[in-house]
Image (cartoon, rainbow, N blue to C red; front, side, top):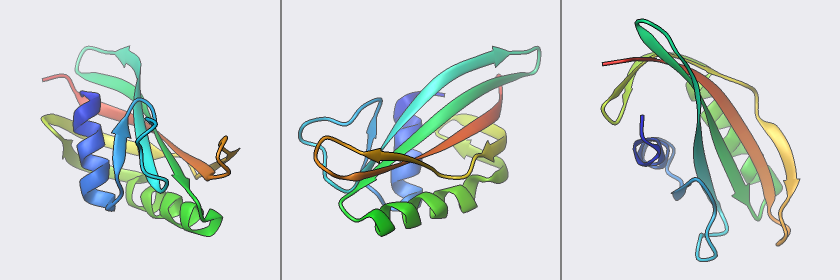
Length: 118
Protein backbone atom coordinates (compact mmCIF):
# COMPACT_ATOMS: atom_id res chain seq x y z
CA UNK A 1 0.00 0.00 0.00
CA UNK A 2 1.28 3.41 -0.89
CA UNK A 3 0.72 6.41 1.33
CA UNK A 4 -0.94 8.36 -1.49
CA UNK A 5 -3.55 5.59 -1.84
CA UNK A 6 -4.24 5.77 1.89
CA UNK A 7 -4.44 9.57 1.77
CA UNK A 8 -7.00 9.40 -1.03
CA UNK A 9 -9.03 6.71 0.79
CA UNK A 10 -9.28 8.75 3.99
CA UNK A 11 -10.02 12.02 2.19
CA UNK A 12 -12.73 10.50 -0.02
CA UNK A 13 -14.40 8.31 2.62
CA UNK A 14 -14.36 10.73 5.53
CA UNK A 15 -14.72 14.06 3.73
CA UNK A 16 -11.67 15.71 5.26
CA UNK A 17 -8.66 17.33 3.57
CA UNK A 18 -5.87 14.79 4.06
CA UNK A 19 -2.09 14.99 3.65
CA UNK A 20 0.62 12.33 3.36
CA UNK A 21 3.26 11.82 6.08
CA UNK A 22 3.16 15.30 7.61
CA UNK A 23 1.22 18.52 7.88
CA UNK A 24 2.60 21.27 5.67
CA UNK A 25 2.71 24.99 6.36
CA UNK A 26 -0.05 25.51 3.79
CA UNK A 27 -2.19 22.67 5.24
CA UNK A 28 -5.69 23.61 6.31
CA UNK A 29 -6.49 24.10 10.00
CA UNK A 30 -9.09 21.33 10.06
CA UNK A 31 -7.54 18.34 8.32
CA UNK A 32 -5.93 14.91 8.61
CA UNK A 33 -2.54 13.37 7.90
CA UNK A 34 -1.79 9.70 7.26
CA UNK A 35 1.35 7.61 7.79
CA UNK A 36 2.17 3.98 7.12
CA UNK A 37 4.53 2.00 9.34
CA UNK A 38 5.70 -1.30 7.84
CA UNK A 39 4.95 -4.42 9.77
CA UNK A 40 5.70 -8.08 9.05
CA UNK A 41 5.47 -9.81 5.70
CA UNK A 42 4.27 -13.37 5.95
CA UNK A 43 3.81 -16.03 3.31
CA UNK A 44 0.30 -14.96 2.25
CA UNK A 45 -0.22 -11.53 3.85
CA UNK A 46 1.39 -8.27 4.86
CA UNK A 47 0.80 -6.70 8.23
CA UNK A 48 1.17 -2.95 8.52
CA UNK A 49 0.17 -0.13 10.80
CA UNK A 50 -1.36 3.16 9.83
CA UNK A 51 -1.87 6.39 11.72
CA UNK A 52 -4.59 8.88 10.91
CA UNK A 53 -3.74 12.10 12.74
CA UNK A 54 -6.50 14.71 12.89
CA UNK A 55 -6.31 18.35 13.85
CA UNK A 56 -9.05 20.90 14.25
CA UNK A 57 -9.58 24.32 15.79
CA UNK A 58 -12.60 22.84 17.58
CA UNK A 59 -11.80 20.17 20.17
CA UNK A 60 -15.28 18.65 19.93
CA UNK A 61 -15.23 18.56 16.11
CA UNK A 62 -11.82 16.88 16.16
CA UNK A 63 -12.96 14.24 18.63
CA UNK A 64 -16.20 13.67 16.69
CA UNK A 65 -14.31 13.08 13.40
CA UNK A 66 -11.87 10.74 15.16
CA UNK A 67 -14.75 8.66 16.51
CA UNK A 68 -16.43 8.63 13.07
CA UNK A 69 -13.26 7.18 11.53
CA UNK A 70 -12.80 4.71 14.37
CA UNK A 71 -16.38 3.42 14.08
CA UNK A 72 -16.01 2.94 10.33
CA UNK A 73 -12.66 1.11 10.53
CA UNK A 74 -12.67 -0.63 13.91
CA UNK A 75 -13.28 -4.14 12.54
CA UNK A 76 -13.66 -3.58 8.80
CA UNK A 77 -13.06 -6.46 6.40
CA UNK A 78 -12.76 -7.01 2.67
CA UNK A 79 -12.11 -3.62 1.06
CA UNK A 80 -9.61 -1.89 -1.21
CA UNK A 81 -7.32 1.02 -0.42
CA UNK A 82 -6.19 1.94 -3.90
CA UNK A 83 -4.94 -1.28 -5.46
CA UNK A 84 -4.32 -2.98 -2.11
CA UNK A 85 -6.89 -5.47 -0.84
CA UNK A 86 -7.34 -5.13 2.92
CA UNK A 87 -8.38 -8.43 4.44
CA UNK A 88 -8.99 -6.95 7.88
CA UNK A 89 -8.54 -3.64 9.68
CA UNK A 90 -8.45 -3.30 13.46
CA UNK A 91 -8.69 0.30 14.69
CA UNK A 92 -7.80 1.50 18.16
CA UNK A 93 -10.05 4.00 19.91
CA UNK A 94 -9.12 7.64 19.25
CA UNK A 95 -6.17 8.89 21.25
CA UNK A 96 -6.01 12.52 22.36
CA UNK A 97 -2.57 13.83 21.37
CA UNK A 98 -2.89 17.38 22.71
CA UNK A 99 -2.68 20.80 21.13
CA UNK A 100 -0.25 21.67 18.37
CA UNK A 101 1.91 24.81 18.29
CA UNK A 102 -1.07 26.81 16.98
CA UNK A 103 -3.55 25.60 19.60
CA UNK A 104 -5.39 23.10 17.36
CA UNK A 105 -6.63 19.92 19.01
CA UNK A 106 -5.11 16.67 17.73
CA UNK A 107 -6.45 13.12 17.87
CA UNK A 108 -4.92 9.96 16.42
CA UNK A 109 -6.66 6.84 15.15
CA UNK A 110 -4.17 4.00 14.81
CA UNK A 111 -4.98 0.85 12.85
CA UNK A 112 -3.45 -2.54 12.22
CA UNK A 113 -4.07 -3.87 8.71
CA UNK A 114 -3.75 -7.33 7.21
CA UNK A 115 -3.42 -7.04 3.44
CA UNK A 116 -3.06 -9.45 0.54
CA UNK A 117 0.47 -9.60 -0.84
CA UNK A 118 -0.68 -9.65 -4.49
